[in-house]
Amino acid sequence: GAKRAGGRVKLGVNIDHIATLRQQRKDGFPEPVYAALIAQEHGAGSIVAHLREDRRHIQDRDIRLLKQILNIPLAMEMAATEEMERIALEVHPARVCLVPEKRQELTTEGGLDVIAHRTSLKKMIQRLSAKKIEVSLFIDPDNDQIRCAKSLGADTVELHTGAYAMAEGPVQAQELAKLLKASELAGKLKLQLHAGHGLNYRNVQPVARLPGMQELNIGFSIIARAVFVGLAAAVQEMKESMLCAG
Ligand code: PXP
Image (cartoon, rainbow, N blue to C red; front, side, top):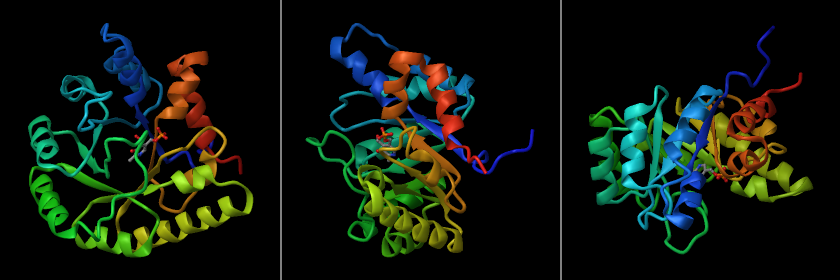
């Protein structure tokens, strides 16, 4: 049939929480690499994994295996540290997404302040780009942050959708308006446009419809749903939820 609007948007499946479950027992399962293959087979456009400094879920070995076995791009989320840069240069994922990281947080809270860290980020982006690794910056939907991301040579901005996802009613509409403005600016600056954090089956569609949106990175809601319906169905259902009705 005719391609529905929103169908062009890729789904990046974040598999961190398969590793979270594995690390509860350390018996070696469930295997995040297996999850990645199922997601790949059922419509994921990329696989996302966050190698945290404390290694609470994804391990170095997972990143290496993912890079070896996947046919779709591997996006490695990481803090902008020397250690992570070294691993990225060694493993060579298709894309690196730089995120802020605090050890105590439950998940990534707030976007990376690229203005505050512009000097060191610019150099890191140059080194990664020189090795043909795409660089994405995870930032709040803020015009100054987006302009700065462009000036540092980033290929992509991933807009933080956490505030939108947490809000309800008119406040959620305001947050969506911020995402819309940010998307328009990213388009004008010719930045690639991704978004993610806190997206689920109910709130994903308006974000998928943002102008120029190319990829949504979604983890927790898909893995949680997979407990009940299986990962293949959970990925397929998310792809359906992203599509626009009209
Ligand atoms: N994008 C980034 C940069 C993230 O750090 C995360 C969380 O790891 C996600 C997307 C996915 O968020 P969620 O698990 O809430 O779908």
